Each structure stands twice: as C-alpha cells, then as structure tokens.
Image (cartoon, rainbow, N blue to C red; front, side, top):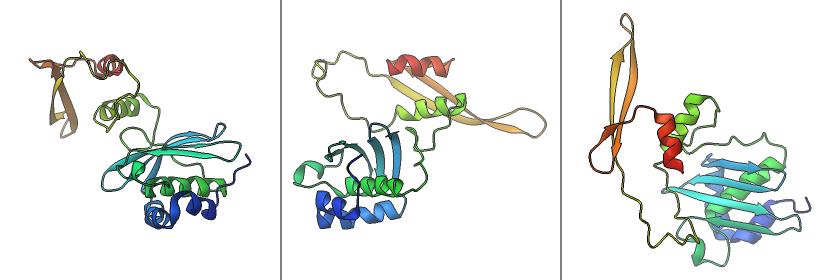
Length: 191
C-alpha cells in the first residue's frame, strides 16, 4: 500500500480540532472495529461518544482516504470529524505493528463464532442503530408491519440449588406469540 497513515496525515485530513477531540476516544479504547478487510484496506468501526457512531474507512492504494461517519457533525465540516480521527488513529496503530484489532459484533462484544454468541449477537443486532438503506425504492412506501416484541427474564432451577438465567421472547404484529426457535426467528427477521 502506498499510503502510510501517520499522525501528520490524520491531522491534515481531520484538522487540528477534530484530531485533538478524536485522540481521547482512541486513547481511552472507545474505538472498536466491526469490520476489517486488510487486503482491500476497508475498515468499519464503532466509536463510543455521546452515543455510538458508525465509521467506515476505505484506504485507496493510490493514497486517497474515503471515510464516513453517522454523527451529525460529519456533513457540517470540510474535514473529517473526531470519530473518523479516532478510527484513523486506531488503523495507524495497527499499521505500526500493533496486534490485529478485535472485531466486535452488533452487541459490542468480541465476535466468537460459537452458536450461542452468533445467536446473541444477532438478537442484540436487531436493536442497533442501523441507518436506513439508501437508494432503496421502498424507503418511502415501506409496507412492512410493525412487530411488537416483549422479553421476560427469570431464573429457572436446573438441579439441586442451581439456577439458570432464561429469556422468553414473544413477538407479533398485534397479539404476542412465544418464539419457540430463536435462531430461525432471527434468520427470517434478517431477510
């Protein structure tokens, strides 16, 4: 790759003000990668600020940096915001030989591809701050029915003086029904 991210390059892209505001996010570990493609130099991250902001960064082999952020300030300035500065600092740290960044799932926890973690991450991902799909012809005339959801949490016994935490989920467009197979439910909701 011909572009080596340096602090100087990041300051030039973000400006001194955004750089100085983004540095504490990076230093305090508020940047978590959600996507890392080191071969194509594309990165996605979540930066925990007043709320969680999603950042995408594409590093072009020609030396260009393209980045976007979901924060309200992103479109207000000519330079990149502090969340992008924090993400670029994290990528810079990786380029300098730091360990591979931990990729987090929708829950914000490190991804573990065991079935339990995939199921939990899928369930928690339903409640994330997703942006509406751009360019979709269905955005204005969305015909989907609003789905009501209720969760019941309780401890249940499973042996002598042993208890397990259980979550019951009910969902439906009006009347709520118990979800028997959460994996299947999440797969169908995702479509």
